[in-house]
Image (cartoon, rainbow, N blue to C red; front, top):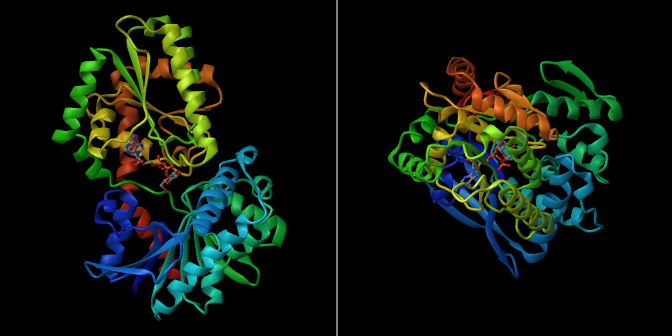
Length: 455
Ligand code: ADQ
């Protein structure tokens, strides 16, 4: 493969942003091929000047500032108040305006025009996520006819829901300019293909090949993984053990039920809190014996729906603690802050149960991190939503419908009571999957298909 050229909203130009699995995976391919990475600088300015170029270990980052209007229309509005809710099946939360799509398209075009002059024969472009659904079209209009891969980190909704987007046709046509489209799960892939088959007489030729608009593209599921072994190591690091012993002092021998999520309405936190209330209500044995800790750092706090969610969670946690708490026991703690990944690994390791119950999630990496952080001699139990992409791979765990809070409460109880032998047997299978299908496997699978497309 020639040079890899990555495009994503945020880049890893700042070395400290290279800690996460995805950033590491992309970074490794860029260093190996002497590639480039384009995106937003993170700055908002009155007038956009020339892009900034940062060179590091043979990789060139080219980042641009946004104007206030671009940041608002492209990022806050169209990406995060239209695409994000619709793709997570929350059409009720989408704000369809008149001008935001134009700004979204203009930013896609401006960045495409920034990229094209740098492209050389033999390069492969890899575009990431819902911010850049139109990027393929603008790169083609700019004259690039080489391979372009696209990976969608969030779900792709069913055709009826996708069609709630006033611009669905323009978006779908633009997406078909990518050579390879990557989805997190088979169900996302099948939603996309069904939409094309129904509306544009596309033909699903098998093995990911789709014939549509007079050309052949490839659409496949590439479930994203984590740096599995590195995460297992992090869970026994000094930092992890310190975090575990700090929370251990708070627990005082009680069992820990843990949740770790960005504070987002897709993560099903109010429904989860309801289920926790029902756990203490329906299973009195758990009172005083189990502590639930939810870690949820606020995200996108400039968006109104996120501020409302925060208020809702504060109220629910207050009510549950008021109803069930006692002088020496806080049933549900909720910490609205971030932790270092080694600290998180330590918390996962001493948790008896991890609640990963999003209403929709492209993949959900917390589920995989929890699996890798377990003590093989005494593993905890993962409770996973049927609506997380991860459920396709991790079907050996306890799978729940996050809307059914009675059943979730019952499943938490089942997990707390699960015999060691069953916990070990389930965990062994989960671990095998997470290790085999890790972040390197994911990257290779995607890049192999992108490479094959160019033959
Ligand atoms: P996210 O919606 O951000 O990602 P997720 O996959 O769970 O969701 O990743 C969250 C990451 O943030 C995990 O690595 C987790 O450890 C970390 N994190 C969460 N809470 C934290 C805290 N309090 N402190 C520190 N770190 C915290 C989007 C999609 C997902 C998809 C990923 C990757 O929405 O569906 O899995 O991209 O493709």
